[in-house]
Image (cartoon, rainbow, N blue to C red; front, side, top):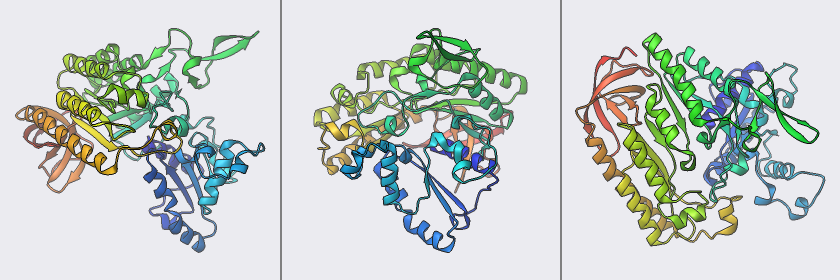
Length: 477
């Protein structure tokens, strides 16, 4: 999501007649797109101060703008003067911005990501930018073969460990027509892989084919047709709205037709999904379209129901397991990856063992395992105690990674001797690295490949974390 945001930020700046600098030293405008998912990410931003202060001494005209998640937080969660918090003249956000400028005196402006289209006004530029909403920016992607397309922003789930609902706000969905136009543009520009993005991507809702807006008449709401782009919150949606599976089905129809007509290939992916919003309808849509990659990433976070309740995850572990089993029953060679947090507040040894058991049984293709860290502004930071010692967290992470690797080894072994279509995405010391449709990395000992192309390859070897393969005749896709 941050890389996608940065593409849009760069596009806005270029429309204001800026051009990308090759280094921070030669920049006239520095835009810091910040992340708040972990404290270390925020610390890195603050740590840029010494370097930027030196640059400002050399060039006092440099402008520095902070955007992203750090630009939208609550002053109550930071060391803002208590008397200042009571000041009715300023909003909580204004007080927080004042705090940030006190900590980072080298900042010129703080601009929330959803207001980045107003960049010209902050820089006192008269150049008109005809964009009314940030997500409406059509990015000039610098990574042509793989492109990110945000379909929503924000989250309504309010997991107790997560800062996203506070830094990104509630869920807002891009309209179908706008998403579809960006997908068409990506495909026509040569994209081989399109990844739909959202903090909770599969909760998307929309309207098709007409664009509707809400009109209030005599205190009653009704929806009228409109040609203007719009944003609808979930509670504003009319009946018979499209859900995420409907959106994927329509995109899949378009991409399938493109494959049939051109003989080329493309993968449609999405991340990050929430288990609560995955259903059989979506699973069937993924299975029925050749253009939709056979891969699901959705965060389990814990294998213990009691921990899931403390996390406010909205499902029980049996529900999660049944969805994984249904996906594997319906879709051949599907990849399932997940996220897990170890050492969440109050996690007992028994609760950890439950998580370990689920990972042993489900044998994920990949899992991103992280140690819980306290985040200011989250419910967990206010309600629970971060009482699992750091060494225990570290040991539990090591145990889970071992179990994950053993299961992955078993699944990887079954792929040896089989042919797969692979998208080459980077150079390596021994050749190239590509990924399969189900998300597996394959090391290809071949120096005659091209980044961004599809190839056919036979899997010839495996480890816990990767596969090795031999490319055959290049695919016609």
